[in-house]
Structures are given as structure tokens and as C-alpha cells.
Length: 111
Image (cartoon, rainbow, N blue to C red; front, side, top):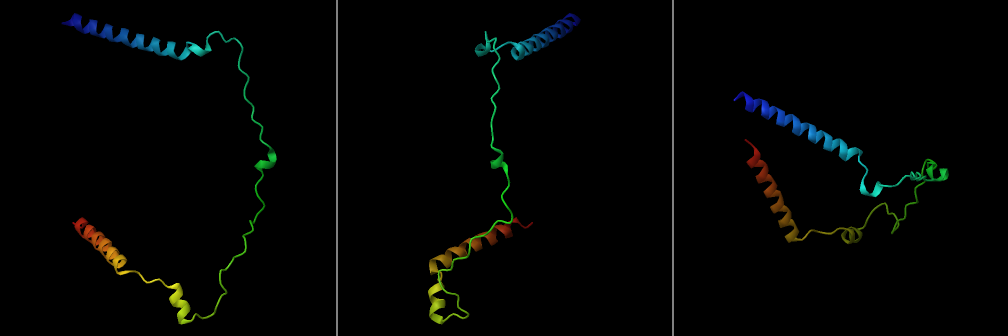
């Protein structure tokens, strides 16, 4: 019984050493594309124009506000009705249904 324990430990050590050697070989062994290339590749140099790196002048100017109509101090009833859009009955019912569903979910979540 004792021989099996020693043999198992020895086998485990051999497997660990083999895996370690394979890992070292994989890291340091040259890849297929790198074989026979004695000339080192030249590094790629990027040139960025320093003028492109400057920050914009502050504060940034905002464009003027363009109004589609003249500003009035008070609106007439016709102007209000033209700008106001009443919701349809179907939209109100859909909103009511969504709100009821959300309320029901909240009430079910309360212990």
C-alpha cells in the first residue's frame, strides 16, 4: 500500500515537471512566423501634430437661440388650443393600465 502512495506522488511530480517544461517551451520557443528572422523589425513611429492636441479656447460660444415665432407676453385661447394636444382615450387607458400593473407589482413585493 505504501508503494502505491510513493508511486502516485512520483507520478504526480513527473506530470507537474512535464507541464512546467511545456509551459516554458511554449513561452520561449519561437513561433512559426518568427523562425529565421534575424533582422529586428523597426518600431512604428506615430507622428501627431501638436496643433491637434491643443485645447479649444474657453468659454465656448453658444449659437444664438432661433425662435420659430415671436415671443408673446400672453397667449390667446386659440394659440393655446393650437399648441396643446389632448391625449386620446386609448392613450389614457394604456397609461392607466400600465400604472395599475406597476402598482400591483409594488403591492405584491411588500411582505
